[in-house]
Length: 455
Image (tube, rainbow, N blue to C red; front, side, top):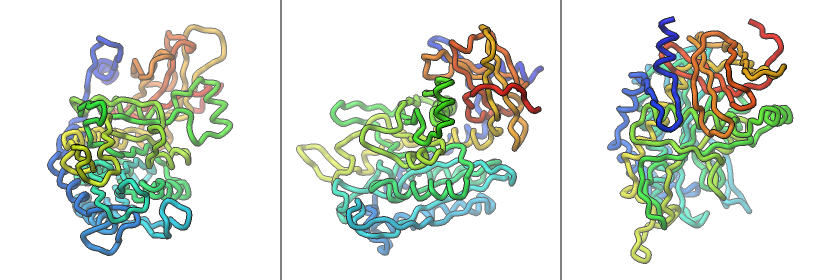
């Protein structure tokens, strides 16, 4: 009863304007977030920019220039953390072949992704949480592989965040596995991400979440002249790119167009990120990406994995894919001096908090359903405890009015069935597992409840 009362008082979160929000932070996650260093992030970005260009057709053999020097350096930086992990961290190249006549990469080439895997401590836990960024850079012309393309923000900022997270998280023991990906081929067609998504599908990876970080370091905008390092965007697909007929039928039956797995992950990132990172608002953008552009989360979405893109709130198009030069009195080019490293630090913190909270959380509840038989102004939800991993201490019932984008209430329960005095016709619901320390799984949007539940 004391535990139930504690959870109810400390973690019942109400979102309406003017309501009090209680923040309950895991001290270990807070410590890790606070260890993120803006100075280290800047050092990493400047090193990456120092390779002159990381174009996918640039040299792979020069030790100081080109994409080969960049991926070798990234791999070495990742490997420095193996001793602190007590051998749980492994780092390797993942090679793939792309390019040829008529393609954006004009000639055949072998490219490399750098993948670091922090193995979970529970051998029975097959969950994987992925964080990615892309290591390649470019200027305006697709096949200009020699011009100066520092790629400080796009996407040196994302790679720097990954390197800093590995340093901090490698010594920590998480039950589930965390995979850090530095991907090539992004600027010419998301090739590196597509290779990894296909590998994950082939090997049947149990990917809980994929967080793609692409441009997380610019805080000022061109044209509108905004300057803001207190907001970051999370892009998430609505109707899944990968949807079977059965999935489509269930979506239509439940009116779940805004409650796919990517949307649940986006909401989770907002709640968890804002819980641990001060002076930052996570803004949810309910589309898969910006108009006419794409990111490395998309190939994962296309194969049915839960993936989103984390991206700066403002973009400066004087810097995107431009050769550094002063044009009409304006400095163009993606140079390291224009990256806001305090902003990168905060955005890296959102990633760390989300990943750590998920990696420590119980598995999701299964067979979640809403009882639809009979006319009633109450709502009955049923589910089953997760079959794997530690037993949850309880579950949160999330609810919101149908027109609201975010969950408004969290109600703690200990059983696997609950009846609430709210009409299922007026509210949306979801269910998530939670442990005694408050680590929550991703929410599960309920389908139609089974008539009987196997207990």
